[in-house]
Length: 187
Ligand SMILES: C[S@@+](CC[C@H](N)C(=O)[O-])C[C@H]1O[C@@H](n2cnc3c(N)ncnc32)[C@H](O)[C@@H]1O
Image 1 (spheres, rainbow, N blue to C red):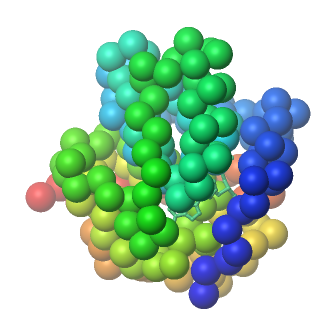
Image 2 (cartoon, helix red, strand yellow):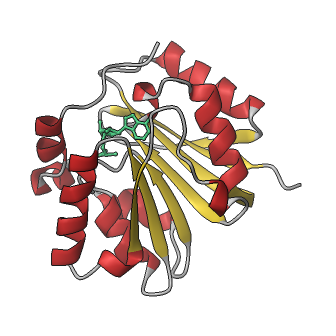
């Protein structure tokens, strides 16, 4: 069953620069991002990871950030504008059951699912949509907070991803989280 959706006040905490001490976005995501990439980020919140990803993707890259809360996206857009990164961030409002990214089919290099899948009403539907959006051999980073997702639940998520064609290639070390790198099988 899905967890409660992250409230707005928590969005402010999650976007705090203090979090970088525990989870440094550049260290965590840098190895997976190259300039020019198209990145899909479900559940960006206020953009703790979005802005560093937009920087790493460079002026020819973009981050499509899809959230179900308009106020999270408002704050994300204003933070991106302040950082001079708004042109690289496509912030989209979606209903909980679908990211609505059919227009990105086969175009995405990286899906960064960071502390969000446990809030989704259907992991199966999410992994199916993410797999359809990814290029062959594209990467999905799955990170879940250990306080919400235990090892058994994380293993179930990995299994549902596998059924959608996304295979775990390695674990990802993130403090206070469970993490994995998944790859879409080449067609
Ligand atoms: C715990 S916050 C994490 C935010 C961000 N990824 C981070 O780590 O700072 C979860 C975010 O996912 C969003 N969310 C929850 N369910 C979602 C869904 N079904 N589709 C897209 N976003 C969702 C919430 O509105 C919230 O902004």
